[in-house]
Amino acid sequence: MRRYYGRSSRAQTQSPFRCEGFARDSTIQATSGDSLPLSLLPPFLRALLVTDGTVTKILEAYFWEPVAVDTLEQRFEIATEAVTWIDVAPGDRCLVRDARLRGTDSGSNFAEAFSLIRIDLIPPGFRQRLIDREIGIGVLIRDSGLESYREVLDVGLDQTADGAAAVFRTYRIFIDKQPVILITEFFPLALYR
Image 1: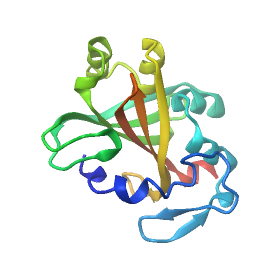
Image 2: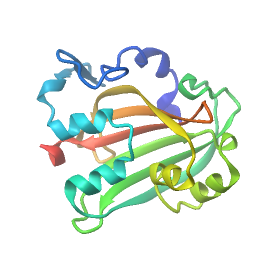
Image 3: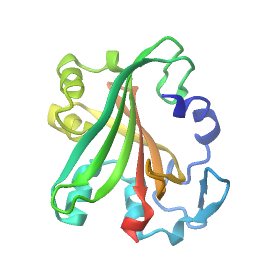
């Protein structure tokens, strides 16, 4: 949860994909301060940064293999600071989840995802399936028939958990017109070049 503390007010207006899928002269920033023109990213990676669909299904179609969602860690935390992107206040109880999207044939790790979920604001059946780690969040939303909306808030350059250069995007998911889930996905650059 700490990775989001203080970040939302800084980055929310900087995302080149906040409102558009095309941003001709835009760059994305690295945590080191370096920047990279979006035009230099592979086209499929640019598409992943702006999609508002289920990433797992897009990866399956692109890599042409089933993609498994491996939940690496999942825990409840009490917020010690606000996370304004999804209206988390200090003292709120949230579910934090780290997952990896892995090709079941190749074993390739296509993406890593870190999620912050306002667990008390989602329907009980959905909540239980999420806690039970049955499937990925996007597929769970689709299968549950919940009306939802995704909004890209930030994109940039960072590293995966094992230190590989990666492009990331942070987006929030609204359910019943409330921001409920905040997800940051990391896509390793070397895999998409």
